[in-house]
Length: 219
Image (cartoon, rainbow, N blue to C red):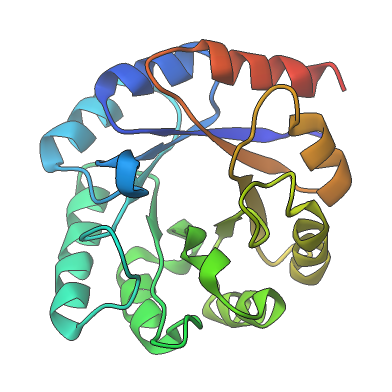
């Protein structure tokens, strides 16, 4: 079974290092220190032009809460259009309501712009009080994948919930396991949950991604 390794990057240097390490896909952000925000046009264009793996661009106007106003949603819609025009393969987004449940209406307005098959719902998901209900909502919206640690601080700690999400989602969407994924635990995460995609940060050093790929290959 092929396991896709996605690398989170926030610079061209990180992107090139991740690809050198064997990353199958990039999540391109600005400001990963706050969980990622929308990268600017110049960075998106530079990365898309230099790598030969799919690039998914974060669409998040600021750090902090995932509750957004109509003005925020308008900005996000324009950012989605900008990123797609620059050649990204997908966008990464997440919208919650004041109860930390999936805001289906505002999410749908963004998904309509991107196309559901090109949307990853990010780790805003891990703030939701009922992960299985949240997965049901996202399946009804048709998104392609969900980045999650299973609601735990790390994917390894959330492996049982990840397994439940994988079972619930079936083939309707992919569960992308993220949160502390490393070479020394990726096999336990994959084997314990059944995920077929994992997500890890790359910081100007191909070693972490290369190690994860090697650990998967040896399983």
